[in-house]
Length: 194
Length: 194
Image 1 (cartoon, rainbow over the protein chains, first blue to last red):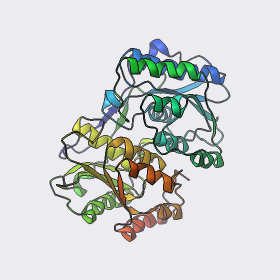
Image 2 (cartoon, rainbow over the protein chains, first blue to last red):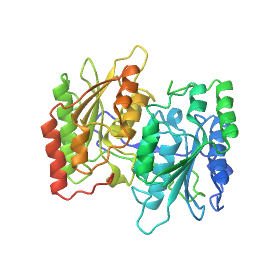
Image 3 (cartoon, rainbow over the protein chains, first blue to last red):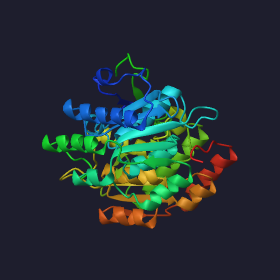
Image 4 (cartoon, helix red, strand yellow):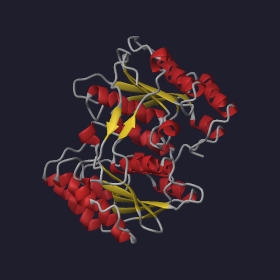
Protein backbone atom coordinates (compact mmCIF):
# COMPACT_ATOMS: atom_id res chain seq x y z
CA UNK A 1 0.00 0.00 0.00
CA UNK A 2 1.34 3.44 -0.89
CA UNK A 3 3.13 5.10 1.99
CA UNK A 4 2.58 8.56 0.55
CA UNK A 5 -1.12 8.37 1.36
CA UNK A 6 -2.29 9.14 4.86
CA UNK A 7 -3.94 5.82 5.64
CA UNK A 8 -2.49 2.71 7.20
CA UNK A 9 0.07 0.82 5.12
CA UNK A 10 -1.84 -2.41 5.47
CA UNK A 11 -4.69 -3.93 7.42
CA UNK A 12 -3.75 -6.98 9.44
CA UNK A 13 -6.38 -9.25 10.92
CA UNK A 14 -5.39 -11.80 13.54
CA UNK A 15 -7.37 -14.34 15.51
CA UNK A 16 -6.86 -14.18 19.30
CA UNK A 17 -3.89 -16.17 20.58
CA UNK A 18 -6.08 -18.41 22.80
CA UNK A 19 -7.49 -20.18 19.74
CA UNK A 20 -5.46 -23.43 20.04
CA UNK A 21 -6.67 -23.89 23.63
CA UNK A 22 -10.29 -23.98 22.47
CA UNK A 23 -10.31 -25.41 18.95
CA UNK A 24 -9.44 -28.95 17.94
CA UNK A 25 -8.82 -28.61 14.19
CA UNK A 26 -8.63 -32.36 13.64
CA UNK A 27 -11.97 -33.31 15.13
CA UNK A 28 -14.94 -34.14 12.90
CA UNK A 29 -17.86 -31.91 13.90
CA UNK A 30 -20.60 -34.11 12.47
CA UNK A 31 -23.87 -32.93 13.99
CA UNK A 32 -25.54 -29.51 14.02
CA UNK A 33 -25.20 -29.61 17.78
CA UNK A 34 -21.43 -30.16 17.63
CA UNK A 35 -20.98 -27.41 15.07
CA UNK A 36 -22.91 -24.80 17.04
CA UNK A 37 -21.25 -25.97 20.25
CA UNK A 38 -17.91 -24.87 18.80
CA UNK A 39 -19.32 -21.52 17.64
CA UNK A 40 -20.68 -20.88 21.14
CA UNK A 41 -17.41 -21.99 22.77
CA UNK A 42 -15.65 -19.38 20.62
CA UNK A 43 -18.13 -16.69 21.66
CA UNK A 44 -17.67 -17.65 25.33
CA UNK A 45 -13.88 -17.54 25.21
CA UNK A 46 -14.00 -14.20 23.42
CA UNK A 47 -15.99 -12.78 26.35
CA UNK A 48 -14.13 -14.52 29.18
CA UNK A 49 -10.71 -13.60 27.80
CA UNK A 50 -11.78 -10.05 26.99
CA UNK A 51 -10.96 -10.20 23.29
CA UNK A 52 -14.31 -8.98 21.95
CA UNK A 53 -18.07 -9.22 21.73
CA UNK A 54 -20.13 -12.33 22.55
CA UNK A 55 -20.21 -13.85 19.08
CA UNK A 56 -18.40 -16.80 17.50
CA UNK A 57 -18.64 -18.63 14.18
CA UNK A 58 -17.12 -21.61 12.40
CA UNK A 59 -17.21 -23.06 8.90
CA UNK A 60 -17.24 -26.79 8.20
CA UNK A 61 -17.45 -29.17 5.30
CA UNK A 62 -21.09 -30.20 5.47
CA UNK A 63 -20.62 -33.95 5.03
CA UNK A 64 -17.35 -34.73 6.75
CA UNK A 65 -17.68 -32.16 9.51
CA UNK A 66 -14.11 -31.06 8.85
CA UNK A 67 -13.36 -27.62 10.30
CA UNK A 68 -12.35 -25.12 7.62
CA UNK A 69 -12.30 -21.80 9.43
CA UNK A 70 -13.25 -19.96 12.61
CA UNK A 71 -14.06 -16.41 13.63
CA UNK A 72 -14.80 -14.36 16.70
CA UNK A 73 -16.14 -10.87 16.91
CA UNK A 74 -13.08 -8.63 16.53
CA UNK A 75 -14.72 -5.20 16.16
CA UNK A 76 -13.25 -3.72 19.33
CA UNK A 77 -9.89 -5.49 19.19
CA UNK A 78 -9.16 -4.31 15.66
CA UNK A 79 -11.21 -1.07 15.60
CA UNK A 80 -13.04 -2.49 12.60
CA UNK A 81 -16.83 -2.52 12.31
CA UNK A 82 -16.70 -5.18 9.58
CA UNK A 83 -15.15 -7.87 11.76
CA UNK A 84 -18.21 -9.69 13.02
CA UNK A 85 -17.53 -13.35 13.83
CA UNK A 86 -19.12 -14.62 10.61
CA UNK A 87 -17.14 -12.23 8.43
CA UNK A 88 -13.86 -13.26 10.05
CA UNK A 89 -14.77 -16.93 9.52
CA UNK A 90 -15.52 -16.33 5.81
CA UNK A 91 -12.20 -14.55 5.34
CA UNK A 92 -10.20 -17.22 7.17
CA UNK A 93 -11.88 -20.11 5.32
CA UNK A 94 -11.51 -18.47 1.90
CA UNK A 95 -7.84 -17.64 2.55
CA UNK A 96 -7.24 -21.22 3.57
CA UNK A 97 -8.89 -22.58 0.43
CA UNK A 98 -7.37 -19.87 -1.78
CA UNK A 99 -10.81 -19.09 -3.21
CA UNK A 100 -13.17 -16.11 -2.96
CA UNK A 101 -16.06 -18.54 -2.70
CA UNK A 102 -16.57 -21.71 -0.70
CA UNK A 103 -18.79 -23.04 -3.49
CA UNK A 104 -16.12 -24.78 -5.56
CA UNK A 105 -17.27 -26.94 -8.49
CA UNK A 106 -16.81 -30.59 -7.55
CA UNK A 107 -15.86 -29.64 -3.99
CA UNK A 108 -17.73 -30.24 -0.76
CA UNK A 109 -20.63 -28.09 0.42
CA UNK A 110 -19.83 -25.80 3.32
CA UNK A 111 -21.93 -24.85 6.31
CA UNK A 112 -21.64 -21.89 8.68
CA UNK A 113 -22.39 -22.35 12.36
CA UNK A 114 -22.83 -19.14 14.31
CA UNK A 115 -23.58 -18.44 17.96
CA UNK A 116 -26.30 -15.96 16.96
CA UNK A 117 -28.51 -15.29 13.95
CA UNK A 118 -26.51 -13.12 11.49
CA UNK A 119 -27.05 -9.37 11.25
CA UNK A 120 -27.93 -7.76 7.92
CA UNK A 121 -24.29 -7.35 6.92
CA UNK A 122 -23.38 -10.94 7.69
CA UNK A 123 -26.54 -12.27 6.03
CA UNK A 124 -25.47 -10.54 2.83
CA UNK A 125 -21.98 -11.95 3.42
CA UNK A 126 -23.45 -15.47 3.67
CA UNK A 127 -24.67 -15.16 0.09
CA UNK A 128 -21.29 -14.06 -1.28
CA UNK A 129 -19.33 -16.63 0.78
CA UNK A 130 -20.85 -19.61 -1.01
CA UNK A 131 -21.88 -21.50 2.14
CA UNK A 132 -24.97 -23.59 1.47
CA UNK A 133 -26.38 -23.73 4.95
CA UNK A 134 -26.38 -21.68 8.17
CA UNK A 135 -26.98 -23.09 11.66
CA UNK A 136 -27.67 -20.51 14.38
CA UNK A 137 -27.63 -20.65 18.19
CA UNK A 138 -29.34 -17.56 19.59
CA UNK A 139 -31.91 -15.67 17.51
CA UNK A 140 -32.38 -12.05 16.51
CA UNK A 141 -34.51 -11.25 19.54
CA UNK A 142 -31.76 -12.46 21.87
CA UNK A 143 -29.31 -9.96 20.35
CA UNK A 144 -31.92 -7.22 20.56
CA UNK A 145 -32.52 -8.03 24.24
CA UNK A 146 -28.81 -7.31 24.71
CA UNK A 147 -29.30 -3.96 22.87
CA UNK A 148 -27.38 -5.12 19.77
CA UNK A 149 -29.09 -3.94 16.61
CA UNK A 150 -29.26 -6.63 13.91
CA UNK A 151 -29.99 -4.26 11.02
CA UNK A 152 -32.48 -4.56 8.15
CA UNK A 153 -33.28 -8.27 8.07
CA UNK A 154 -36.82 -9.28 7.05
CA UNK A 155 -38.64 -12.52 6.29
CA UNK A 156 -38.09 -11.60 2.62
CA UNK A 157 -34.34 -11.58 3.25
CA UNK A 158 -34.48 -15.28 4.11
CA UNK A 159 -36.77 -15.94 1.13
CA UNK A 160 -34.13 -14.31 -1.06
CA UNK A 161 -31.33 -16.55 0.21
CA UNK A 162 -33.58 -19.60 0.17
CA UNK A 163 -34.35 -19.00 -3.51
CA UNK A 164 -30.57 -19.18 -4.09
CA UNK A 165 -30.30 -22.50 -2.28
CA UNK A 166 -29.11 -21.36 1.15
CA UNK A 167 -30.98 -22.98 4.05
CA UNK A 168 -31.18 -21.93 7.71
CA UNK A 169 -31.67 -23.65 11.05
CA UNK A 170 -32.30 -21.54 14.16
CA UNK A 171 -32.17 -22.01 17.90
CA UNK A 172 -29.61 -24.83 18.26
CA UNK A 173 -28.30 -24.66 21.86
CA UNK A 174 -30.04 -21.29 22.10
CA UNK A 175 -30.08 -21.05 25.90
CA UNK A 176 -26.33 -21.65 26.03
CA UNK A 177 -25.68 -19.00 23.38
CA UNK A 178 -27.94 -16.52 25.22
CA UNK A 179 -26.07 -17.18 28.46
CA UNK A 180 -22.79 -16.05 26.88
CA UNK A 181 -24.48 -12.87 25.73
CA UNK A 182 -25.87 -12.30 29.23
CA UNK A 183 -22.38 -12.78 30.68
CA UNK A 184 -21.07 -10.10 28.34
CA UNK A 185 -23.84 -7.75 29.47
CA UNK A 186 -23.13 -8.45 33.16
CA UNK A 187 -19.45 -7.65 32.58
CA UNK A 188 -20.48 -4.28 31.11
CA UNK A 189 -19.09 -5.12 27.67
CA UNK A 190 -19.54 -2.30 25.15
CA UNK A 191 -22.45 -2.51 22.71
CA UNK A 192 -20.85 -1.30 19.48
CA UNK A 193 -23.91 -1.75 17.24
CA UNK A 194 -26.31 0.02 19.58
CA UNK B 1 -2.39 -16.15 15.26
CA UNK B 2 -1.61 -19.68 16.39
CA UNK B 3 0.65 -21.48 14.00
CA UNK B 4 -0.53 -24.89 15.18
CA UNK B 5 -3.92 -24.38 13.56
CA UNK B 6 -4.33 -25.08 9.88
CA UNK B 7 -5.46 -21.63 8.75
CA UNK B 8 -3.45 -18.68 7.59
CA UNK B 9 -1.31 -17.00 10.25
CA UNK B 10 -2.79 -13.63 9.48
CA UNK B 11 -4.97 -11.89 6.94
CA UNK B 12 -3.34 -8.94 5.21
CA UNK B 13 -5.36 -6.48 3.19
CA UNK B 14 -3.59 -4.04 0.89
CA UNK B 15 -4.83 -1.37 -1.44
CA UNK B 16 -3.49 -1.59 -5.01
CA UNK B 17 -0.14 0.12 -5.56
CA UNK B 18 -1.54 2.51 -8.20
CA UNK B 19 -3.49 4.42 -5.54
CA UNK B 20 -1.16 7.49 -5.33
CA UNK B 21 -1.47 8.01 -9.09
CA UNK B 22 -5.23 8.42 -8.81
CA UNK B 23 -5.96 9.87 -5.39
CA UNK B 24 -5.06 13.35 -4.16
CA UNK B 25 -5.38 12.99 -0.38
CA UNK B 26 -4.99 16.72 0.24
CA UNK B 27 -7.82 17.92 -1.98
CA UNK B 28 -11.13 19.02 -0.47
CA UNK B 29 -13.93 17.04 -2.15
CA UNK B 30 -16.72 19.47 -1.37
CA UNK B 31 -19.65 18.54 -3.61
CA UNK B 32 -21.53 15.28 -4.06
CA UNK B 33 -20.33 15.31 -7.64
CA UNK B 34 -16.66 15.56 -6.62
CA UNK B 35 -17.04 12.80 -4.05
CA UNK B 36 -18.66 10.34 -6.43
CA UNK B 37 -16.22 11.33 -9.17
CA UNK B 38 -13.41 9.96 -6.99
CA UNK B 39 -15.33 6.76 -6.23
CA UNK B 40 -15.88 6.21 -9.95
CA UNK B 41 -12.25 7.02 -10.77
CA UNK B 42 -11.24 4.30 -8.30
CA UNK B 43 -13.63 1.83 -9.93
CA UNK B 44 -12.25 2.69 -13.37
CA UNK B 45 -8.62 2.27 -12.37
CA UNK B 46 -9.44 -1.03 -10.70
CA UNK B 47 -10.78 -2.30 -14.02
CA UNK B 48 -8.19 -0.75 -16.33
CA UNK B 49 -5.27 -1.92 -14.20
CA UNK B 50 -6.78 -5.37 -13.70
CA UNK B 51 -6.84 -5.27 -9.91
CA UNK B 52 -10.50 -6.18 -9.40
CA UNK B 53 -14.18 -5.62 -10.05
CA UNK B 54 -15.74 -2.36 -11.28
CA UNK B 55 -16.49 -0.81 -7.92
CA UNK B 56 -14.86 1.98 -5.91
CA UNK B 57 -15.72 3.86 -2.74
CA UNK B 58 -14.41 6.72 -0.63
CA UNK B 59 -15.20 8.22 2.77
CA UNK B 60 -15.07 11.93 3.49
CA UNK B 61 -15.74 14.35 6.29
CA UNK B 62 -19.14 15.69 5.30
CA UNK B 63 -18.49 19.40 5.87
CA UNK B 64 -14.85 19.87 4.96
CA UNK B 65 -14.75 17.31 2.17
CA UNK B 66 -11.54 15.92 3.62
CA UNK B 67 -10.74 12.43 2.36
CA UNK B 68 -10.59 9.88 5.18
CA UNK B 69 -10.40 6.52 3.38
CA UNK B 70 -10.75 4.76 0.06
CA UNK B 71 -11.59 1.27 -1.15
CA UNK B 72 -11.75 -0.74 -4.34
CA UNK B 73 -13.29 -4.11 -4.90
CA UNK B 74 -10.61 -6.59 -3.84
CA UNK B 75 -12.55 -9.87 -3.88
CA UNK B 76 -10.51 -11.49 -6.65
CA UNK B 77 -7.13 -10.02 -5.73
CA UNK B 78 -7.36 -11.19 -2.12
CA UNK B 79 -9.63 -14.26 -2.57
CA UNK B 80 -11.98 -12.65 -0.06
CA UNK B 81 -15.71 -12.31 -0.65
CA UNK B 82 -16.01 -9.66 2.05
CA UNK B 83 -13.78 -7.13 0.31
CA UNK B 84 -16.30 -5.06 -1.60
CA UNK B 85 -15.16 -1.49 -2.18
CA UNK B 86 -17.34 -0.06 0.59
CA UNK B 87 -16.12 -2.60 3.15
CA UNK B 88 -12.48 -1.84 2.34
CA UNK B 89 -13.19 1.89 2.67
CA UNK B 90 -14.81 1.38 6.09
CA UNK B 91 -11.85 -0.65 7.31
CA UNK B 92 -9.27 1.83 6.02
CA UNK B 93 -11.08 4.86 7.46
CA UNK B 94 -11.65 3.23 10.85
CA UNK B 95 -8.03 2.08 11.06
CA UNK B 96 -6.90 5.60 10.23
CA UNK B 97 -9.11 7.12 12.93
CA UNK B 98 -8.38 4.31 15.40
CA UNK B 99 -12.10 3.85 16.00
CA UNK B 100 -14.58 1.06 15.17
CA UNK B 101 -17.13 3.72 14.27
CA UNK B 102 -16.89 6.92 12.25
CA UNK B 103 -19.57 8.45 14.47
CA UNK B 104 -17.31 9.96 17.11
CA UNK B 105 -18.91 12.25 19.72
CA UNK B 106 -17.96 15.83 18.95
CA UNK B 107 -16.29 14.76 15.69
CA UNK B 108 -17.32 15.51 12.12
CA UNK B 109 -20.04 13.59 10.29
CA UNK B 110 -18.78 11.21 7.62
CA UNK B 111 -20.20 10.41 4.21
CA UNK B 112 -19.63 7.40 1.95
CA UNK B 113 -19.46 7.89 -1.80
CA UNK B 114 -19.70 4.72 -3.83
CA UNK B 115 -19.63 4.06 -7.56
CA UNK B 116 -22.71 1.81 -7.25
CA UNK B 117 -25.60 1.35 -4.83
CA UNK B 118 -24.42 -0.95 -2.00
CA UNK B 119 -25.30 -4.64 -1.92
CA UNK B 120 -27.06 -6.15 1.10
CA UNK B 121 -23.79 -6.83 2.92
CA UNK B 122 -22.43 -3.34 2.39
CA UNK B 123 -25.77 -1.74 3.30
CA UNK B 124 -25.61 -3.52 6.65
CA UNK B 125 -22.00 -2.42 6.89
CA UNK B 126 -23.06 1.21 6.35
CA UNK B 127 -25.11 1.04 9.53
CA UNK B 128 -22.23 -0.32 11.64
CA UNK B 129 -19.65 2.05 10.12
CA UNK B 130 -21.29 5.16 11.53
CA UNK B 131 -21.39 7.11 8.25
CA UNK B 132 -24.38 9.47 8.22
CA UNK B 133 -24.93 9.68 4.49
CA UNK B 134 -24.35 7.60 1.34
CA UNK B 135 -24.00 9.02 -2.17
CA UNK B 136 -24.25 6.49 -5.01
CA UNK B 137 -23.33 6.58 -8.70
CA UNK B 138 -24.92 3.63 -10.49
CA UNK B 139 -28.04 1.99 -9.08
CA UNK B 140 -29.02 -1.58 -8.25
CA UNK B 141 -30.44 -2.23 -11.69
CA UNK B 142 -27.15 -1.27 -13.33
CA UNK B 143 -25.33 -3.94 -11.31
CA UNK B 144 -28.04 -6.47 -12.15
CA UNK B 145 -27.70 -5.64 -15.85
CA UNK B 146 -24.06 -6.69 -15.48
CA UNK B 147 -25.23 -9.95 -13.81
CA UNK B 148 -24.00 -8.91 -10.35
CA UNK B 149 -26.49 -9.94 -7.67
CA UNK B 150 -27.05 -7.22 -5.06
CA UNK B 151 -28.64 -9.48 -2.45
CA UNK B 152 -31.68 -8.96 -0.22
CA UNK B 153 -32.17 -5.18 -0.28
CA UNK B 154 -35.75 -3.88 -0.13
CA UNK B 155 -37.43 -0.48 0.25
CA UNK B 156 -37.81 -1.43 3.93
CA UNK B 157 -34.03 -1.75 4.19
CA UNK B 158 -33.67 1.94 3.36
CA UNK B 159 -36.52 2.82 5.73
CA UNK B 160 -34.61 0.99 8.46
CA UNK B 161 -31.42 2.98 7.89
CA UNK B 162 -33.36 6.20 7.44
CA UNK B 163 -35.00 5.70 10.84
CA UNK B 164 -31.46 5.57 12.26
CA UNK B 165 -30.51 8.84 10.61
CA UNK B 166 -28.64 7.58 7.53
CA UNK B 167 -29.66 9.31 4.30
CA UNK B 168 -29.09 8.25 0.68
CA UNK B 169 -28.64 9.98 -2.65
CA UNK B 170 -28.71 7.90 -5.85
CA UNK B 171 -27.68 8.32 -9.46
CA UNK B 172 -24.89 10.92 -9.17
CA UNK B 173 -22.80 10.62 -12.38
CA UNK B 174 -24.71 7.40 -13.04
CA UNK B 175 -23.89 7.12 -16.75
CA UNK B 176 -20.17 7.40 -16.02
CA UNK B 177 -20.36 4.73 -13.32
CA UNK B 178 -22.31 2.43 -15.65
CA UNK B 179 -19.73 2.91 -18.36
CA UNK B 180 -16.99 1.52 -16.08
CA UNK B 181 -19.16 -1.51 -15.40
CA UNK B 182 -19.74 -1.97 -19.12
CA UNK B 183 -15.98 -1.80 -19.73
CA UNK B 184 -15.47 -4.57 -17.18
CA UNK B 185 -18.10 -6.68 -18.94
CA UNK B 186 -16.51 -6.09 -22.37
CA UNK B 187 -13.14 -7.19 -20.96
CA UNK B 188 -14.74 -10.44 -19.80
CA UNK B 189 -14.13 -9.69 -16.13
CA UNK B 190 -15.39 -12.44 -13.80
CA UNK B 191 -18.76 -11.97 -12.10
CA UNK B 192 -18.06 -13.30 -8.61
CA UNK B 193 -21.51 -12.58 -7.16
CA UNK B 194 -23.44 -14.19 -9.97
